[in-house]
Image (cartoon, rainbow, N blue to C red; front, side, top):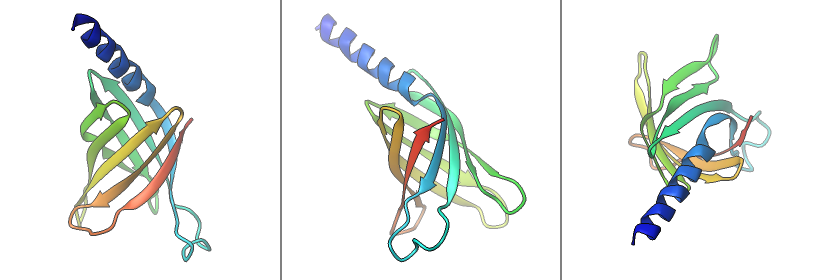
Amino acid sequence: MRLALALLGCVLAAAAAGIDGHWNAEIVRGKQASAQPAAVFSLDLKSSDGKVTGTVALAGKKRPQIQRVENGRLVGDRLTFTTSQKGKNPVSFSWDVTLQGDQLSGSRTRDGAKRSQAFTAKRN
């Protein structure tokens, strides 16, 4: 039993260390939107004991919109967190991400929306 717990701890620590860093991402566009340039953003993530903190930087008109990672949890290779956009029309997003080596794939869903936006990211 102790060996199993020690192994699980090592696996979780390895997965957590794998998420740390700067990631460049882009929204996956459908066929109809392929003529438009891809929406790009970046994630800066840091993990400790299964908890993940950091920021998401989205392109803005004049400067990037920085959103803080909240409620970040890493279990195995799956990361979930939320972000909030401040301003005149505040909105929250739920993120569901899978870590695959030096690549992330996942989706973000605006609170109340029926559809999510898929994205991929590579470690910088």
